[in-house]
Length: 183
Image 1 (cartoon, rainbow, N blue to C red):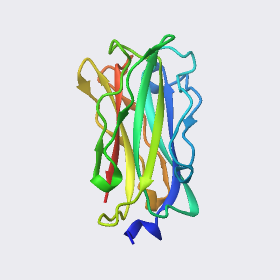
Image 2 (cartoon, helix red, strand yellow):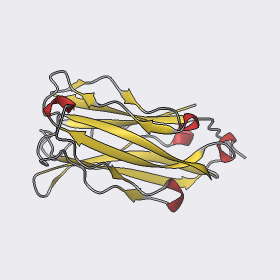
Image 3 (tube, rainbow, N blue to C red):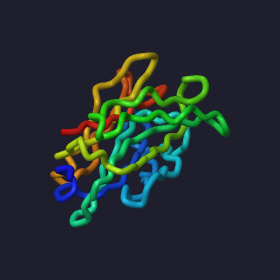
Image 4 (tube, rainbow, N blue to C red):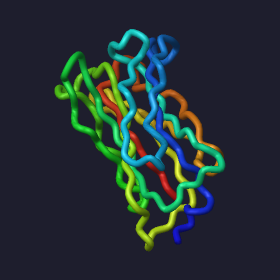
């Protein structure tokens, strides 16, 4: 039985976007379903005006007392611009594979998407792997330059929200990279 079965809580994943360099115009935070309910995606999230956000955060929302119970998982992100200009869903590696970062999630032209959504995929935990803790991260990318990753607290510490990720000029990033760090 993997180490995570008795100690780590179930969770859902959220994203929130803001404008004005992350100082205002916060959009509604949008969440996936709880990991124990299988694969899910969040509704689309945008900043308050739904146009070219400047900052993003990721939220590891844990459920104390509700344990993970042999579920493997990965997270993904997708971007959309305007109406119908979607990029592909980009996934992190599975937790059982050591986690890591997703490829860049952006829209079909790679320029200033308006909205993002997150994905949470699950499967049975491989018996050969162990998991003692995990946390999530998000980076913004603008003109090929990646921000520093902003990370959530560890799941064993109750999870929570990351700080806002902003690109070098805190203005209209071109995409995000989501990450899964495991121990």
